[in-house]
Length: 267
Ligand SMILES: [Zn+2]
Image (spheres, rainbow, N blue to C red):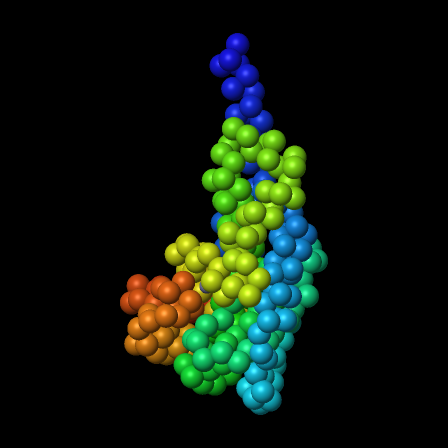
């Protein structure tokens, strides 16, 4: 009898997990999504607002303008691509925002729904619009690929285990809140968010260069940008430590640039 109940419970969990599957735009990779986009967005937005309220925006008007201009152009091209592929519903919770903050760290991050923050220090490496588009395209890709939802779903699964997953999800807000705290960090510490996996980084790199090409930027500048990042070492920077810069990564980008140009019809 006990075995039977366990079977029923695990079947229930398995079907929950199956119904919680999605697939990533552009790459088609299957992913675990246990939380709705709306819930992820709300949880991320709370933390993003706290971060913005506690940080200082850059006083460099022309650099801020470059971040907003390049970001908006990339976002428009990304939206256009998703729309023309019948994926516009993927963006229903999106409200893009691009901010440059006064902080010398070489860092950038993205919150769900397209809230993207670049630190002034990153502009010492990304020195022109194309190189900045490498960073912003990569961050936009994390948002479009719902990597935050996937990470929160993995946290929920790890925390509750498949046996009591259905119970945890029936009292969802507590599970979602606690997953959001471990994925995004707390308020002002949002820059300390849980590192992305290598799989997510490679996926964001690839999608990012496609978005770059669609927006009219030259994705070959990704090679120069990541070579400079790799030369900078990994001392004390979230962007460097969470975005592994190694030869394998650069080689992977090199391999996929022709594909990105082809998708954008810019061969
Ligand atoms: Zn990344």
